[in-house]
Length: 286
Length: 286
DNA sequence: AGTATATTTGAAATTTTATTTTATGAAAGA
DNA sequence: TCTTTCATAAAATAAAATTTCAAATATACT
Image (spheres, rainbow over the protein chains, first blue to last red):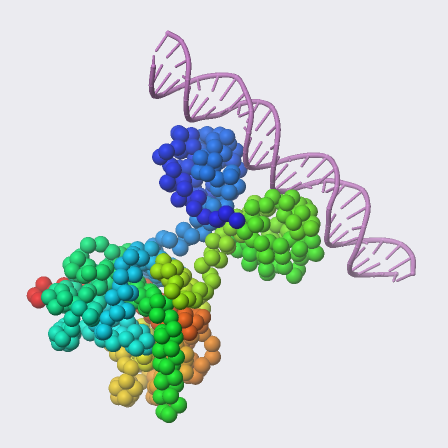
């Protein structure tokens, strides 16, 4: 069966290429989608100062079977849209509202991060990490959490992985690394001095580099060989309690990990199994 | 305007309380929702071995205005449904597929976590944390990341907050605390020995306790005064690379932070502003 | 069991809505 | 200025939704 969404996108997309009367209707629907789907073709024609015939023509122009299909597809979009808006928190907001807003915002960030992530870059990143003798994750402040998360994950599948937020420690380890290793620099802004310096050092020593930064040009991702982006999210959230950016970073790590895991499926499963046994051994003898 | 979803839920909910012919139709729609919304009332009546009249009666029985509204509400549900399924990663999966699956799963976890989180418990948690002289977050392994995240966030708004994954360190700090403080134990399973012991100690010293665990009964949340739950998510993900559980924990922390921030709006904004200035001061003189 | 009453049903009638046809008028090109 | 093309809405038609209604069935009561 046909899809149940995309109506609003179609309207927006085609808006300019339509004859005047159809354009008027498209605009009316885009401005009043909820109302529009509850109207009849005749009523919608009147409301938008055209006719029911024009409404039907519009539907055909969009490549749809008729007004019913348009309604259904707009309804589907509305379903989505309620989640696609950014909501900031206000003073003395109800608890349920806060739960809903924070959840909606974070979901939005994840979606955007998923959309932005380049398949090509991900593929390269997996190839490099997969063959690397060792991986060094580096991040400062909140981004260190993402580095630490990566370390925990990759250790489980027997990767030689380190995470640092101290540039001296990181530099010490990098000193003896080379083209067979990889440095992953994490910085939300992409301009954190320490991360910049570390990537410069890595470049100096011909170590492959991967960046995890927000989307857009920045010192960090210009330096890196491979760029992985997080959503550049609306970080208002009460003039920045900055919540979702770190979740976006973890999400990128998750995807990187899972991609690697899928590519090396058998070994991954084996390693995870051994990890689990080791942990339960520790627990038994506690 | 009316909602654009809930049709399938209504059908399921009412299924048993309907007269036979309407029941048949309800079943048919639940089994073939995509097809059903593209049929006419007459066609749907025939397909389900009843009549168009019965279809209309069904719509009225559900409290809807007519067949059109049912269609729209089912379309909205279908929009949701594609995302509400859990997808595990398979060997040599395409990169785009992995991105989509991981994103969908994580979104699902967030949604569920949002749904599960009790407004009442959240309110109590905010009250306790808000008045606490100091907050001690404790978690082992992956859960330590959530503790660390909480520490970073709450430090920004001038809370006296500590995070530990070493039970000896944590015990040392707790030794001198009392009813005016609060201990927050984080454990995905809710059965981590260290967290259990720490909460027992806290109880001994009459320190209020909050747990952040997966939904369901466990040692940790039975001990705690206030329970905050994360989704008990399908943690298959390739026999547990266990990705989304930590994101769910961060999500709970985010919500707790934002709730507190909203309750103490003015001070929070001031503190965040001062934090930002302090950090940019550091950067300028580097 | 037998009767009265209420419920459920689909066929047919009706109403509403969607869609097509068509005549008209406006704009672009020759 | 005259075609030609296109867009338009009114009117006609087709299709779909909804209501009505009489028959069938179930249920309650005696």
